[in-house]
Image (cartoon, rainbow, N blue to C red; front, top):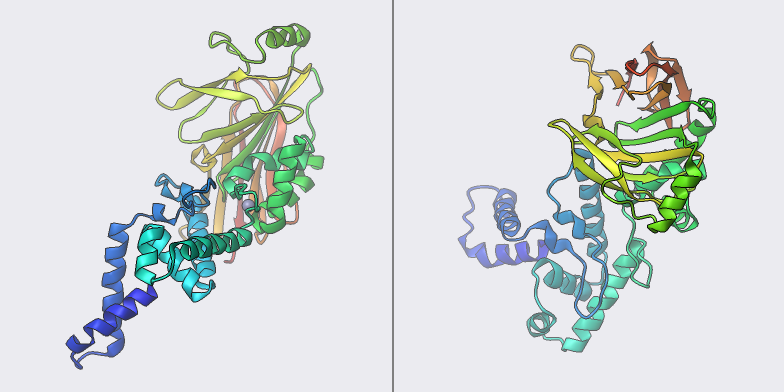
Length: 387
Ligand SMILES: [Zn+2]
């Protein structure tokens, strides 16, 4: 783009009248060019697919316009790092990538424009893409780079040690190069051993929420005295549960999304979502491999921050934050809520709840007690954060 802007400036130089500064004249050309560019091209053009090869698009998801501010931040960071890597490519390769993916030109058009044989354009483009892929952790077989969003759902079961080996591998590959996800894993690995569940014949529930990311990991354990019968019935239908059977059914607030549910051994339970009311959705299992006598459902939710839990910044004191979170499970149980607080937070005051657990990369405010069916459990706290 810089190249194009400079070319435009060079061509327009005769029209330049020396009454303003040269810099502002140049910036005006640049801003016109960029405005034009962005009105012509959506970010979808960043997709790094290329013809004749079936590679998953690295940045195909950028076309999604329903992004939360947190997601947008991650995407923007990703775009800048892609741009940075492109700028480090050798001149000819950089030009080709620009023409191919930003101007959407064919190999043939690039060949004509650059006066380079088609075969050379193709191999040089290929080489440039491989260089970029290597930088972004895409393996040579064309396996997709795992975005944080795709990894989030496994982080709790990974830290809990209840993950399937193939998913474990994905998480380990990812956290090697992602400090953000690694921080979550470190915190969860510290937190989990401190959690005390109900006795086996009682219902146990917990929710660990990470307000900054909008993520929440919940766990619900219940007893299935007739689990052997259910297992037989499941085996008969190969785990595919008929629509009429409301098994493992639960509800959640609209706006927040359930992204996965796993069992005791990290098998994914496929859930079907139903509209329940104006404000709530209901899910039920449509595929389930296994039933356990003491069944743990580990759920992962996204956009959790829209639920009834908040981090509010005080109007009078900008460093002062208030956090709160409610939950009503609707059954007699041992219920616990944990909410992540930045590790830099100071003067944490628990207004309602049991205390704070320091987990290195995050601190967690928490409340943990037995509740009746009608009871709402609430966590309330404040902290100071100097950013
Ligand atoms: Zn990550």
